Length: 110
Image (tube, rainbow, N blue to C red; front, side, top):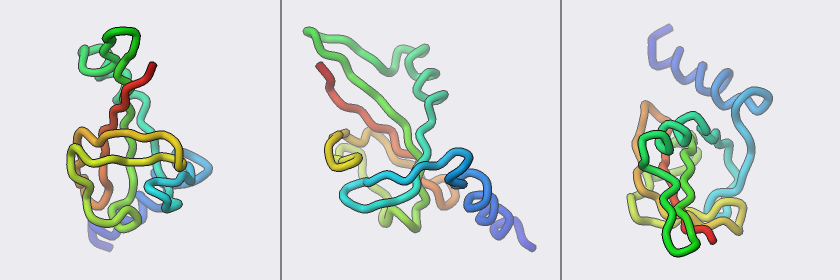
């Protein structure tokens, strides 16, 4: 086995295991396996990069991971992501991390 095959197997069997980390959600009307990384969100809040408050509203942030092959073309920063057909987020960054997109999101909440 080569390293790429091992990584692909780990993505499927460990990280995107529905009984461990992943959950099935709707992104832009398409069902797919995603992982929310709450630790990354906490780190950003500690560094003052998330959770900004202004005029009774605040900036909510989230980080999610999704397999690139399931999502499709890597999303662009500034584009919109609709989660579960009701929560609208703006994508602030999307990075391809070896076949997995890490997508940083933000939304204004009241």
